[in-house]
Image 1: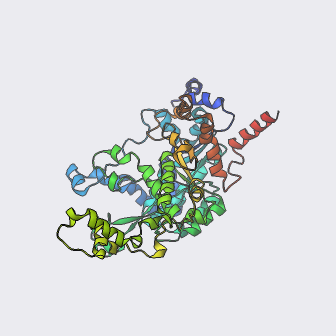
Image 2: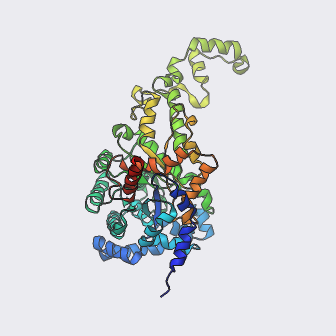
Image 3: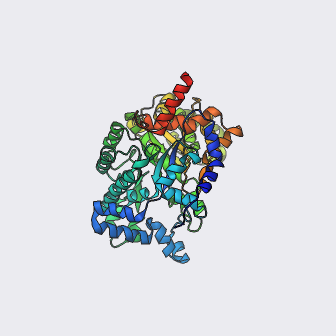
Length: 511
């Protein structure tokens, strides 16, 4: 049997730039996003336990076709079919392959545990790649059996390494009830501490589904859907789920993307579909929870929005303030047609509008309508008093409330080499001078990390270049992640390397 020499392992660790950075820090490093690969034969044992042989067989069939049915659809279609049916180009070559050591690291819990220090982290939160599939299938039996099996499998295989590694629990959310059921099992029975939820659920547009049943019209029904983001305009009341999340202290995160959405549906170019798609999906989720009043009703709720960078969170925060100033309940009255001075308007048209009016005759009411242009006639502008305040459910009565409902509740995963984090740490981007909460999320195990040991060093390069400060770096890799995970669970890091290092630092500083 071929073995890996200790000399090789020692050489790798010795030459890690990230380990060198970490050695200089007087605080722990928490990586909020490391991706792992499951070992199929063992996972199938767990699937059989919860779904039986029938679900195992169906799972294998999905693997043959590709877990993402649209990905399978693209590869199985001819170029002409892709164009005619507008099948978007899916991801390809998404995992490290040439760097065999890193691929093995994402697949072997013991090796990942051993190399975490080399990567520069004291603690890593793990996102198994398989978790995304069960969340988005509309088959309830498949969705629930796979979610339960995947959670049990990962709780078991990473249990020996819990002082430095913790896998997230996959939580299906087609209904709040199934979300609560899996949440309670994952936390209370399996001991998992963090969650991954879908960013949205595709639901059929009922009027179309009734006219074109999926059984007879899969091309129509399969693409006639709307996106439910669990807050504003949701099909269900998800408040019981958010309440249970806070009660159990397991803050949810999301990785869902928007590839295949209207503006991300190139049939030939994966990068066209990929750039910005995580931020786009997370923005929709966060705005739904904000405008739907979820963060107002549950100020303790903390949600991590990963892989999209932190800049978009800062950008939306600034836009929310700007728009509230112009379109709060009182300010929006500036645009209410009922406040139009018709006499003054008519006099202005008489004095300055002869070249437009020519020899035609108009009443004051007619001029009042025509002044808005063809597309904005007054008859379409009448609004009910209770429907003019888009910020009402969010409970916003002053711009400081926006900070309380946005900055306090949302944490934004920023990958190691994402330079746009500079915007998140720039307080001049908004009127309140507030920084948003950026999380260090290496994304190790995916294609944007060609070298596992470089991630922390790449982030620290921003400090050396003067792009962010030492204080910002500490907030990114320690303070913000620590606050996120402990916000509703003070014992999240109990018994971990993070707790141990903080104790050692406290003793050292006291001495």
